[in-house]
Image 1 (tube, rainbow, N blue to C red):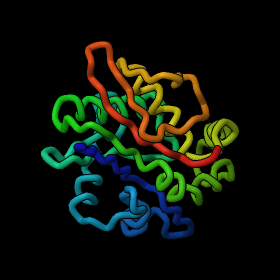
Image 2: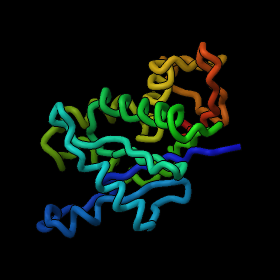
Image 3: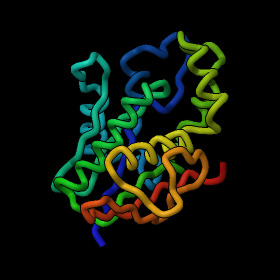
Image 4: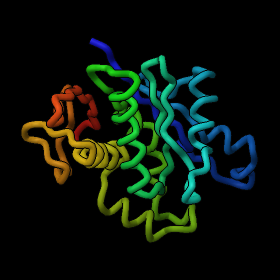
Length: 198
């Protein structure tokens, strides 16, 4: 079975203090997150940095990038990303799989994303950024970033025409553990996106 591996790249480590905005501190915050946790692979880091900093037509930053012919796609991560942008980036993972990688399964390391962002999630709403209300709104709705991204992934799958028995894009809970999704044209893909207990 061909597997497609998703990695997240972004500013997940929390660094506060006088030098928190220095170039060195910014680089230390950016990390690649995969199934083994924080990954030190220099090729992934460099590609992740390029995806993370890509300026989009609408002025937003960050785009999904596939390292074809490798079975690897990097999704940018920011704590207060616009949800519509996250949906588009996860849709891009699905399109990259359909058009290039053609893997039978896609794995999203949501447990590791959850773990890598716990410290930052705990800081939300405490005034460490200039959008406290937005931080509080996200924190009141979601227990962690793993489950937040799991919910957004369900929306992305639905938007791209995928469905699975017993899975609704409106379901807030319910991990996708080797769940087979199908499209009307017969396209199938198994999704593994486990964010742990809610």
